[in-house]
Length: 165
Image 1: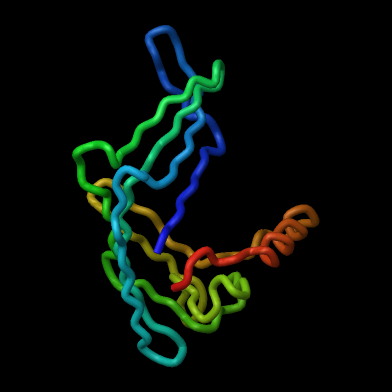
Image 2 (image 1 turned 60 degrees about the vertical axis):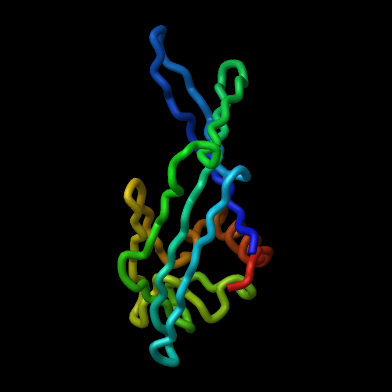
């Protein structure tokens, strides 16, 4: 099943060089040179939910764009002779089939599977690898304000899942 990743910096990365500094924008996607398969094991422990353990090998492709002249440099980690960074759940991560009131539910996107959510509310989780780690938090509605609530409702109604669990 194909997986997509597309990240972009929200602020430039400042690089020091001999003559001063340069600002670069960074984009990250999945390497097309070498891919890696991941896995997830979901266990239902009760009618209300259970736990899951996952392994997500990441082989990134970086695009750097210098701000002052739009020079582009790329780094395809898949072309390097190094192993994929494998982010692995260190312990079972909770999930519930009915979201607590403080968790975002988007029809067709996270029906009956609310990762990193506990029966009594939110629960934080972490996946770690030898060189990286990332946290997992349940999806949350945007903070309510006149501007963000209108964006939140429009983005929620148009959200679709690109893959099946």
